[in-house]
Image (cartoon, rainbow over all chains, first blue to last red; front, side, top):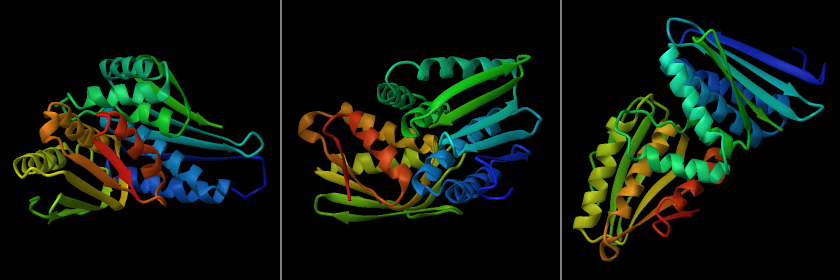
Length: 158
Length: 125
């Protein structure tokens, strides 16, 4: 990819779902976006969002690769991240329930409410990743499920 | 008043110093493990008990050297803060969080913690 060769740039990453790769992907993306967008704060927010999406993907992935696409549109100043993985229908439906819940209403109220709920959990899950992205990155989230076992979450920041 | 066994793991170091008002817990590195609750829940529980037993007025968390905190780490802090909601006003202490304004997530994540138990958490530079 040649910097400034086009108003649109992208990067794709595919990796086996190992936890240790998440921080490596986060650091790489942070550096890539700082160069691509020239905005360190924005790069940090996007990298945090990618990290949270990858954590979800790796935690619930079933025998498959984790795929991430990051697109930068310089003309509209938008950045999108899509993370795709395969999981069980049960895990995907549980994720959809959280998605539907945390993408409604005021982002800060949803975040605080979800934090209070998380504080009562003792199962090791936080269920805070998506609501954190929505509030802290000021992002719009969308979700796509294919054949019950493949899920993509897209985060778009303008 | 606040005493913990220092933690030195691959990516995270945690230590504490005592002070007349309570004490300070220092974090450096990354909290980005899949489930930090086995590390953080007992630690915060210990700090909470010591603060109550010692009549602390404040416990400070120094996050200036904490490079990353994932949402599972936020949950652990939220869990501790929510314990304060059940403490009678006369025994309540304040949680002060020293943040690093050059670290983006600290500017967006930490202020949200002040909404959990109003008046109990203060973000300072």
